[in-house]
Image (cartoon, rainbow, N blue to C red; front, side, top):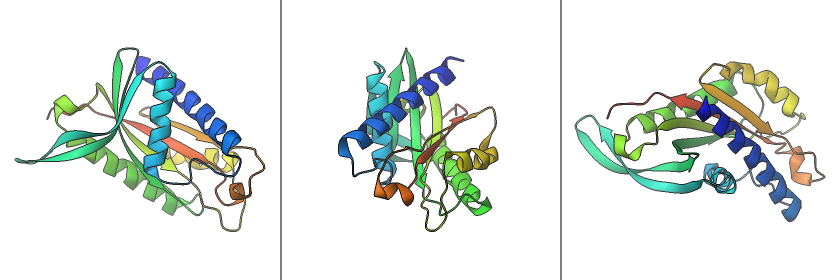
Length: 190
């Protein structure tokens, strides 16, 4: 499907941008900040792929009969397909059942926010996103550990990718990488 191919290209570009940032900054990790920063790197990836993107755009939200103004984290368009993405971020201290529950809750919260958006404010593809930045205190974890943990999220509506750099950076021991979980949302009629 076209939407999956576009998101896979976006994630490949996103990882290249993260690597470039680490290479240039040499002392900083781009992903350990917060959801807002990580959403910005996705927007940059969309632009680098020849698309367009806006972050934190105004939307109308429906709460039963009430309406309110809100914001959606990211909208981008690539190859005539447009996406609305609502993002969350978690910092688990270890990959565990509790971490999986927190990630699932974050994805559910993002999905709920997307579902309340007015139809005219949504993209043709709506995606809940969770950035997972493990914060390691004592034990070393890496990509292999995350891939084992990702079994909690495997289904046909979900894309998972990760970036665990191999660089000499003192902060890598505490924040070894980032994973991203993207879940397609149904198109709601509001």
